[in-house]
Image (tube, rainbow, N blue to C red; front, side, top):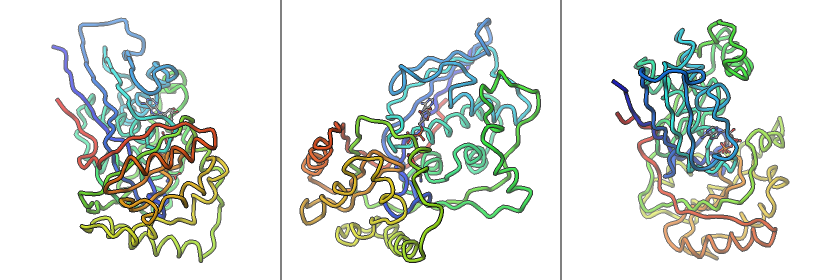
Length: 350
Ligand SMILES: Nc1ncnc2c1ncn2[C@@H]1O[C@H](COP(=O)(O)OP(=O)(O)O)[C@@H](O)[C@H]1O
Ligand SMILES: N[C@@H](CCOP(=O)(O)O)C(=O)O
């Protein structure tokens, strides 16, 4: 009897200005996997057939040991001494999350992969334990925590003891060998230490929506992290910490205080350095304010960019049109959407 289930994982916007690698907001675009395990079908390569629609359909790999979702699932399966998918696993991927735009497509893919393995192997892993697996792959916690847990979340990585630290810091190539199947040594991959990440869900004022202005070019997170400095001044760190402390509560208050939120979304840790990769970034962030555009609460780079996230209560059209026009002057065309928080996080639906 074939077994079918669905996994849905929301996209996410990390940082929200000052919370670099700390806060994330799950938003209403969902990656969906429709999975069927049918033992009556045989002869499928590596036991897994991937079909794909949506963002990335033209380019993303369909081989189970190359695609990020199924590579992640294979890692978790191998940690449980299962070396391949059960014959035969069909995974249909529906992905409306734009890739490489700062909306957490890779975080959602990793969360989906861990949930896929958990369901296939019937491991019964808790969400917290699944997070440990996610954090072995996507090593900053903001996107994966928001995608797994839902809503507006803050997270930190526990200080691990030296042995656990060594396990956590092993090169990504040992966690996700490329291609995972081709180089299969038969060895168990390194299992994650327990309780790597800890998080808390903040509240969210229901009238606050997120306008995502999504440029038509990709910027990989790795590339956008490579321009960041290795050290910061105490002044800049204190600037961000002061704002982050205010922001997480300011966004829960109704009615929202636009002046407070706008100032609390300023950042000196990542956005100023990323301007070299995103044409017009500094001007765009400075051009739309609660005074010039009533309804606006705050504006920031979404994740590693290039998407701009504007939090607002109304006047979505006017705010988006201004940002679109500014990007257009730089020769960058954009799409835009009004998104809501995805409160539930990742879901498994039988
Ligand atoms: N649905 C998906 N299936 C397979 N791989 C994916 C999927 N979504 C994202 N990825 C991988 O993640 C990469 C984008 O990750 P990243 O550079 O971190 O940007 P983002 O900000 O979108 O997370 C894609 O180029 C692709 O390799
Ligand atoms: N804190 C990270 C977040 C990256 O998010 P993504 O959606 O761009 O993958 C960073 O700013 O580098």
